[in-house]
Image (cartoon, rainbow, N blue to C red):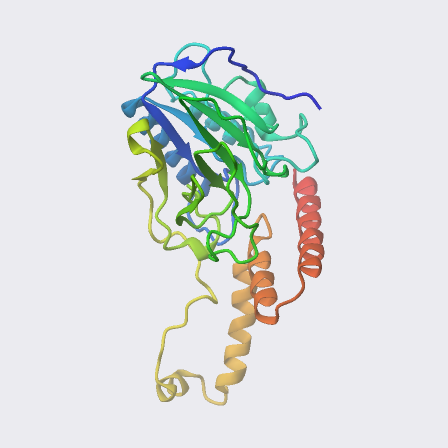
Length: 345
């Protein structure tokens, strides 16, 4: 398949002081997971904040994948708002923000006209990186910085071309182990010729890991899709030549309490007080059972099946079910959710 990039640069892009890395956005219409706020509006505000930081600090914007939560997002109002938000980035004529193809951005082996990220690229609001390799070069005050990319679904290269006097930065969208924080992830290995790797996909931030001469970063997602991220403080990440192999985390404004914690938090109470509060003749065990049934029904009504996925993840973790079975069951759930969304559209 040919690349669908809307802009190819033959010469290094000049005029920027550094790069702004933007973690997974997972933009979506409707209810997402256990979120009880206006999720789409919350994520759009973070994208606007990223644009403001980019403009104020004269940075080149690079998204780390998963622009959309559902590849075939078809809410016209949301799509128009996303286009408007990307146009808040004040870039020179002919220069577009770069967005790495993520695991949620397509449903087939390649992008098609049915994918919302493909629409954004064709509308000319961003460059969609759908193929691995060198993307572009930036001339940052005399320092040549080469941006390389490995979109979701592609093999991480063992080496890339290193030119004397230049820096190589690779953006990826992959599960990595990050020194055991993600034990099921792919082992981090040095990419020969690469100075720094910046990864999306993994929503929880990780401390920097050094592999040989390559610094590995995982800044975490901008959005908080799942309840396990309720304490996550979203950031965007700045790099300039002065930062060396480090990234600067710039906090984003966000609301604290946006999750329905039904069934997730239990507050301690004396058993005697609980029994006294129950209607006469109703046992604590049967009351808890009925309450649990009600809570599960209410918390489970989402547009993306994420609460059910959440429960499945806990089950697999508890009983250490094999990965093949996990993949099979979760893929079946995704098919059911997709079919339900088609019927609702």
